[in-house]
Length: 242
Image (cartoon, rainbow, N blue to C red; front, side, top):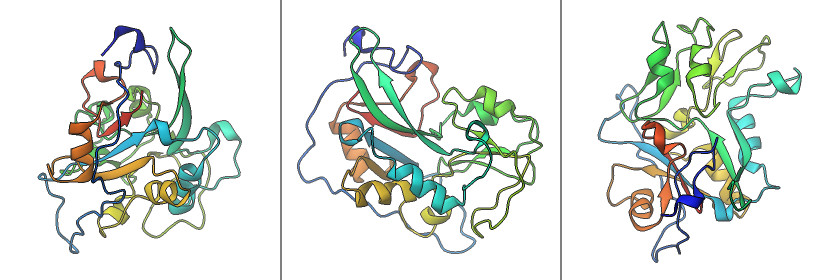
């Protein structure tokens, strides 16, 4: 790890090392489906591993898939549109080297959005997925200010034609749910599927707690890192190739 590679996000991401993909790695890992009414298990920690070397700056398949899956289409002006995932360019200050990557809720183990929520609307499931209960959210936006990744959006406009499994509400704050409705069915998040379908395969989903899972093996074998590791939030999203 070298000091000159620090500062990818607001000047403080940790340094990274270039590495090769380990042999025998599967590109797709299927989540463990839960039966109806079964509580999320603390034995699981769902997470993402994003390989920036495979992420094309001109590709927004993950963004479009998220919007379609969660019914985020909006007629409001761009700066107020909800955005659960966005593409960003990470720039190394000293060398100017850039990498493209998707940015979404990082599903932190120590989420500051949960700490500051006055109503308990922001919460973390036992399996590490951070969510917002729209019925308890009062739209104070403290969580938006607390999130260092700017990953939350406020719903400014009336909503219509919502997805049945993705309830939303005007005046509430929302963010990436890791497609929890799909995960609980044993499926992949929509962004992961879209990235693979686009021929990138830059996003890997899986159980970080399962030592035999693909994502856990990659995190062990390759040089990966969370963004803003200095904050000690232990994000469930890791990045490779920074």
